[in-house]
Structure formats: C-alpha cells, structure tokens
Image 1 (cartoon, one colour):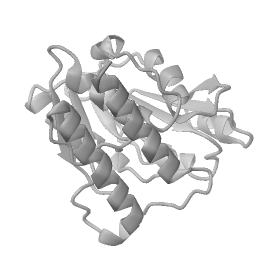
Image 2 (spheres, one colour; image 1 turned 45 degrees about the vertical axis):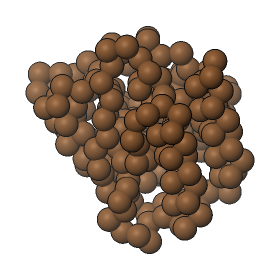
Image 3 (cartoon, helix red, strand yellow; image 1 turned 30 degrees about the vertical axis):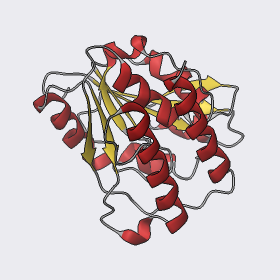
Image 4 (cartoon, helix red, strand yellow; image 1 turned 60 degrees about the vertical axis):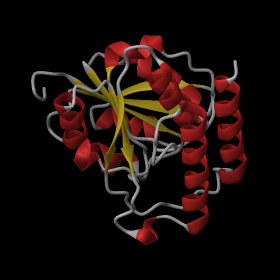
Length: 223
C-alpha cells in the first residue's frame, strides 16, 4: 500500500531474462502487485519473473501493444504503473509519480524524460523522433506533451475501461495518451523523470514504428 492505495506495476517483456531481475528488485516496497507479460518470450523471462514474485501473463503475440492489452486489464490495484523490462525507466521514481497523480487530483500521469538530465542517455535520432511525435500530438489534440512516446505511466485503474485501444505495436504508447487526453472527465498531466541509459535493441524498427505512431494519431483524430 502507498497512501492507502494498492499499486500494480505492469511490465511487458520480450526476452528480457537479463534485465527483468534488476527491474523487479528495484521496485519500491510499497508495490502490491507486479505483472510481467511474457510476450512470446523464448528465454527464461517467465521463470525468472515468477521466482521474484511476479504474476506472469502469457501473450502469444509479440507486439508491444498486444502485451499491454493482455496485462493492463489484469491489475487488481487502485493505481496502475507501467515500466519497461530493460530498466530504461526509473522504478525508484514510482512513488513520486503516484504522489503527483494524487496531489494534483490527476487521473493519468505520463512520465516525461524531457528535458534529459543526461543528454547522452538518448541518441540524436531518438530525440528528433520524439520531438516530431510530441509536436504532432500537440497540433492534433491541443495538449502540450513533451514525451509522447514515454512507456512509463501512472493512472487510476478504474479509467482503463474507457479507453478504446487498437494498436498491437509500438504506437500503443501514443494511443493510450491520446485516449486519456480525449476521454471525458479524465485529467491528463506529465511528470519529469530521469531517463537511464537507453540500450540499443536491434529488434525495434524505430523509424517505421514512429511513422506508424504518427499515422495512428492522425487516424484517431479524424475518425
């Protein structure tokens, strides 16, 4: 419990056997539930996560959005927080994020990595892509967002059923924020966090995913 609320953490993973132990061990003691989504893993991610006390949800589709759609509805906590399985996002700042959510009476808080405390933690091309997507979100939806592609959020769990989430891939990061911004009576905000060193991952087709995210935002705006 934290401030009389149960907190659930959801972590989508695709072959994160090496990274997930550090992520789970770095979680604050106040976390009540850890859900790791085994997104078609071929390594020991599920086994390691279970050994560390996490609930493992299996998802055959390896897509990023598909993993979240499998894990997010399973939470039992009052507040849902998301992280990545590689330790890029700061688990040690979860309570800060929840404090901001509660103190500002907000419903959905997205963790913004910008401005970067360590400029070397992200490549120039990633900074440029994030700026492009954040600008597009602001122009399309009228809400200033610094980090549209952030994968760390905290929100009141009871608002999740209001979201109409369609993406099974990386654009899910933009889509859930768009849904929070557009949803009636849902208050959206950002909170600055420290970004750990980004790890190069050959599995991620960065620019192709960025274009898909941009297309999804435009599509949802004019549906």
